[in-house]
Image (cartoon, rainbow, N blue to C red; front, side):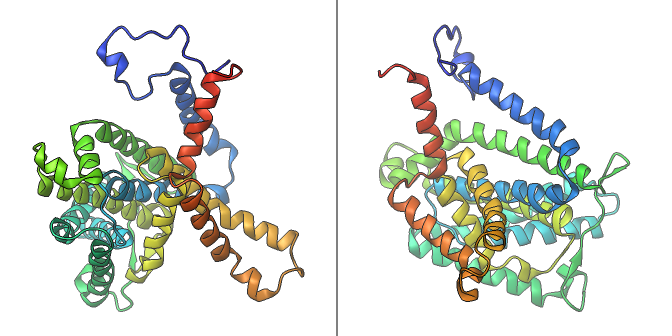
Length: 355
């Protein structure tokens, strides 16, 4: 009875086209944002902010970028971590080589650099698709990591290839504490998530979905295939680049090219598979699942299953559970956790009536 639309009337096109047309959704989002911005920094410990919530937000942003490309535009990619590396190293070099560069402009510059690289490696999508395109983006993963390792200019000629991110400062305020870093990352992620939500509801998003469903039919009705696919690669890589910059500046602090390995690309891909392909909320649900599940498994193994399972099984329990869950979602619910949440909301809109 609490989640019903009775009495909620739309009297304008703007009201009918708003992001959250149901009043309960708008109130729920405002409550979640209020808790995230005000309650979480005061109630959660430094460990939760630094080791769990900040990486959760960063991986949510990276998964959001991949979801735009794979979920909405239908272009499979295995190079998300490489585009994150481009964003991280580009932001570092902007701060290093441009005097007085604002940190937010450095993040945007890192995202734009990643977008340019994404367009270059997205060109094969004009001729190939599916697993062949995945192999092309896999080449980007290996090539970018190799380039950042071999060319010393990107790491300021560091002998180990490791870069140390500069301090984040905006209008004289330095983001040093975990609470400050968390709030900065949260604000950036919220803004980019709202932009993505509006983007997929616009003509650009409809063009992406048309190309995803049937590119030949999309071209027949006048959609420019080259422009649409390359725009999807650019926007997706921009989001991954900003996520990589935040990964270096707000989370790790000291990064190397090998830190953006193929394992990280697969991790981001697992996030959108489990969370829900083609869903904005699915990126956040999948990231929360992937970040929190290892912690829960460690607690279960250490407290309940210690001495019960062989060491060879307990050490690989995370991989076993991840693989089993991916198979489960692909078979039972291909649209992931976001679809389960949507089904739950549809049930609530009818409850307690049967129709």
